[in-house]
Image 1 (spheres, helix red, strand yellow):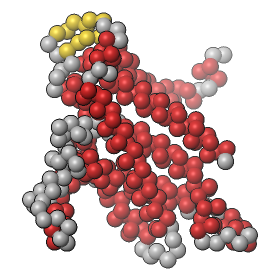
Image 2 (tube, rainbow, N blue to C red):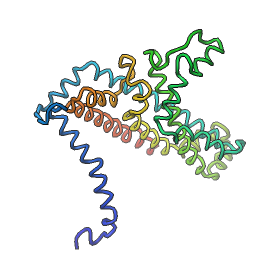
Image 3 (cartoon, rainbow, N blue to C red):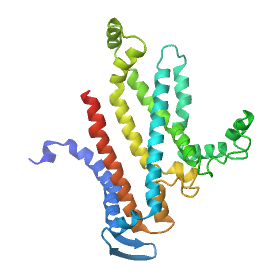
Image 4 (spheres, helix red, strand yellow):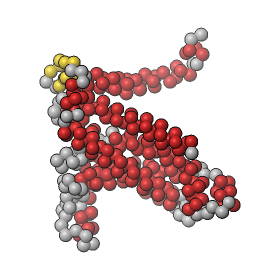
Length: 293
């Protein structure tokens, strides 16, 4: 008997596996192949150039700056997405909080809104002349003139990070709150018997119990943020002066503005490798280390 006969369930998952192969695996392989060939919109010919395009990429100041911006964008966004989401989950999980269902619904609005709509709302809030943020700053005497949040190099990345944090922290809150609700009361009672109350109980009982959920959330946030495109594209377009141009934005411009598909494919492979390496390192040293503790 072959493997399919012994495991008839494989027949049921085979269509999904084939769909994933078509949607994900084939484009991935195709991108790797394109990265080793010179091709653009002006010609159907493919010229094998080996690693030439990768060498050119790492001698391209714009590409190197996009890597730098990507790490700033990712570290800042993930850090505050997690911290804000974690604090919100802890607060909502307290017994004295009433109407939790309503608070959850209101806080989940940013996450359920389509990204393009969310970013355009923030573009309006950031408007230097008519935005409510500048209006509030002027009313409080903090600013005397309007700040051009998305067109000033000093504030553009900060503005994008704020939007990303606002958009994604509700998901972190929801997942961590669900994990907090699963902490056994027996463990809390045992900790109180041992004299651990308040903050000490939180860090000795609650935090270790939800740690695995936190590790998973952070990993997902890292992957999503490294590959994020919509926020930067709609809010700043990578500007001003490429100060918010992350790798995904560089790839888009290279492919669909410069029509250099070979170079865009090479840059996509670099982004894939960065994402894969960081994910493996995180799982090996952070998630495994947390499980051992």
